[in-house]
Length: 117
Image (cartoon, rainbow, N blue to C red; front, top):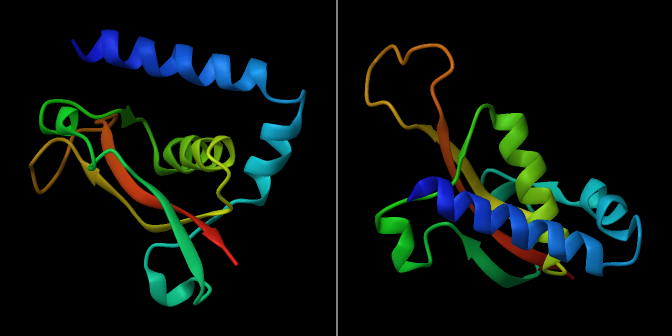
């Protein structure tokens, strides 16, 4: 089930990229800033979307990432596609509940896409 959901997400991302002006999404994604809390973010912003916890599907599955850097890149791209220029309350968590997770374990991440004013 998770593979089907990830395939759908990949297809949606691909379509959004193809429908956007060539190179605009990548350029905008590079400008998106990521903040672990609102204290390091600019004071004024508009919430666009909370990723991966706002849907009932998140009770069963969410995307996973191999590294924090991979997750940050994905969140930057999502933000650019939705018209945002920032991510606040960004965090990643090990999927394996253990004091010493095995190497290569997957991360679940969430955050809120915003548009700073």
